[in-house]
Length: 66
Image (cartoon, rainbow, N blue to C red):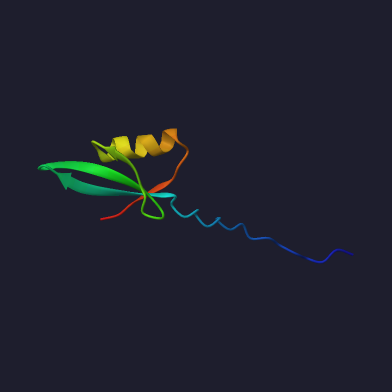
């Protein structure tokens, strides 16, 4: 006799972001700085879209910060 057991699927917790994308201003222009979790700068992008494209090309996850 098997016990009557049911399973409820759960969504996995999203992995924490490996990087953070922050808008910055330099010389009157807006750029997007990409930083590691520990604050180390990784790259600078001309747009938010390019910043996240860079992350995708390098298999990294990112989160916006302001």
